[in-house]
Amino acid sequence: SPKNILVQWIVQRNLVAFADTHFSGRLVDIGCGVKPYRDLIRPYVSEHIGVDHEGSFHGKDNVDLFGTAYAIPVPDDAFDSALCTAVLEHLEEPELALRECHRVLKPGGIALYSVPFIWHLHEEPRDFYRFSKYGLRYLFEKTGFDIVEIKALSGFWVTFGQLLVYNLYRLNRGPLRWLRIIDCLGLLVQGVFYSLDQVDRTEQWTWMYMVVVRKPKSSLDDHADQNKAASRDGA
Image (cartoon, rainbow, N blue to C red; front, side, top):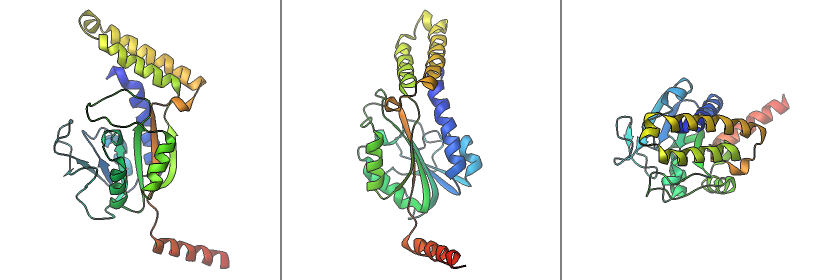
């Protein structure tokens, strides 16, 4: 959609960069919806398993496993990677969802989350939370993950510009819609404010964070790594 082409492009660009660095093997897409990023991450994984619930707003055509973020119907340590985009804010108990992701990941597995910080209400009434980087660190560490990176995807200007565009689209009806005036104005605003964001990046105003976390290796793996390191040091 023209109204959010900028933020989608930013998300996709960062997702590909993180996937290239961190993803491998079997991936679980928690709250997959229509699997919007399937083609982007296909080169980096061997299997892309989408999980969603029976009552998803986005239909069932792309769902491989029916379950919830709290109960994914697979054994422990089933996946090498996990993806969860713009889902945590819609869950009453995000901590429980993170614990379930931790359960289904193999030791050493990577999870990538995108979560909003400054954003309007959406998919009401199932819109419960917004997350600061400090809250994210607390939640992920509390549920047993190691933080790899927490990245703000924008500064003030992209956030303000995108919210302005969404607000303008409330007027997108009648002649304004037929003439595509709001579409053109929205694209112009996004372009201008993205340019401003490159000059003045104030990340405390970000609309969204992308979080990369790792499930720690088991104690046995850690012991093996220590033995390898000791062998190298003694060589």
